[in-house]
Length: 233
Length: 248
Image (cartoon, rainbow over all chains, first blue to last red; front, side, top):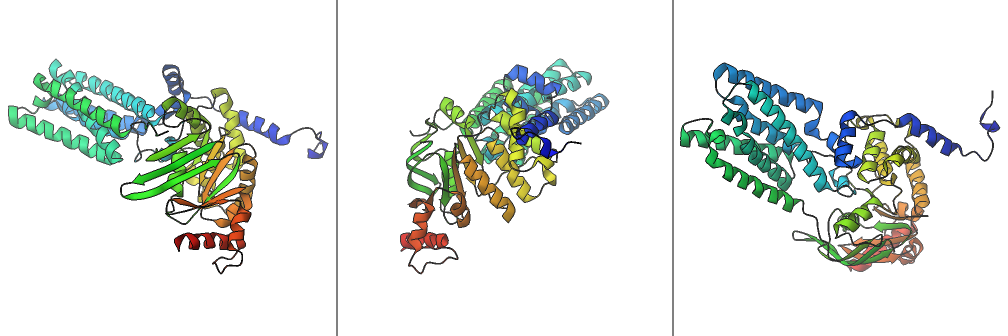
């Protein structure tokens, strides 16, 4: 049985061990991360995407359950609950996509080569896309009219913009969620008071331009709040 | 010079955190001493490109951090351990260090080896697959140091790095600092004078946002000689003497 004393002196055991550890500890990214790497062309950005709090399995399942309940309620009562709750659910997901209140190592992540603005953009788009897809599926399955089925996508954009802007400016995901839910509740209730229909906020086509203008304004606020300093040198 | 600061100021609202600091720092371990609220963390955050200066000139690793392209290049060669280092509780040590290796754009093929080497260097090999939520404060601090050195940085910035480390770990950490300082610029912000005496080749003392002293640890020690300045060790007396002088 040979021991450490039998190893030639020119063998660097530390180096050997690092080589072993590299093999033992190395892990292959999952299929979602590998796909994200291909699309984004940045392994760092891909890893940042798959660690998004509001894209983790628990959150996605919770979102699906809420929308499923909305779909069943819609089919049972005729009131389009999916269209009414989807923007609020998406706003919560967007607010919890990125920021100092969500990422514990946020300060550290602001000093790395992959810019925090890119991480924010990619995560927000991914959360928005997933929520839109789940919402559309639930909405289509609930059997509502086409105007209702897709009508909530535009207001959802505005509500998500509000949630993201509030979360970014206040540096708190909870503030973002509160702002998004409050904004959407006020909009829905205002629509009911003005038009006498709970779905007015979703189906009134004259509101689309104001929604999109509002969303663009929120995007500008987010851009300003996360602006890249030009420095002074 | 890896760090060049020219008349740098930083203001947060009405508070002048950094007030006209000029420094040039090359290879070696540079200690940034000072009492709480002296402006050390603000200065370090500017060097880490986390916040921009309110005025003044900063060049890091020969580039201007105010422009996107050069800043990205700087950040690839930067290691940073903030004072309040946050952790993802469900991550393992390896996952956390790997995450930051990827965010620092370490070439993908080199990441596994770089992560293994960084984790071993801070003595966390036996905890490599442990979840961060199960680690002690000192171990978490070492995880923070591992992520900072995973890209073999040319500029390493450490804010109170020995907080939470036990005496044995601090001795090992100082040895690591000296080793890193042989090829890189290491800036250590601390209020622990003994860390500076043991590991630093040069030291600056900050007070009220300004540099009150810039020299070697021996020169700082000499400032306390023959005075009645408070302190249990010669370096501490030098520290106290300089502070008393600038405040008088």
